[in-house]
Length: 165
Image (cartoon, rainbow, N blue to C red; front, side):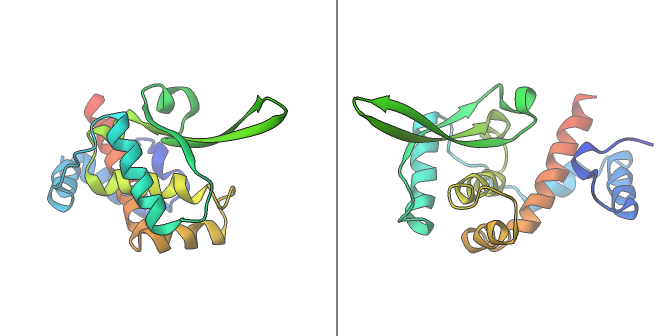
């Protein structure tokens, strides 16, 4: 039985359906049919503008972003698809905080909806540090189909892993 690392907490019947899609070689076609729109966010500058636009639309009063980049080491090093950090630096006699969002480079070639989902997730961490009810309410406020996108992203990452093997 194949281990599905992105579905570890899901019930076995659901995992069995995912395994069946992989064995029948239908998972990629299913995802391609549902998510056929690529995005045009190819570099760090465009990513910053994309994230800033979403932030301005939904989190106007939150702290400003210092840096937003694609990070090639992210998935391998930290087992994460995106990170949100606050970096504090001493600037004269004051402490200056800078917010950074790093997105795994797998999203550079992912469908547009998955990029939006991970950006929404990281932006929500600007207000809510923990994955609690308020966090997920904020995510669904910014992307009403957030939970479906998160599930489908798990399918997409599983498909990528299966394709590598």
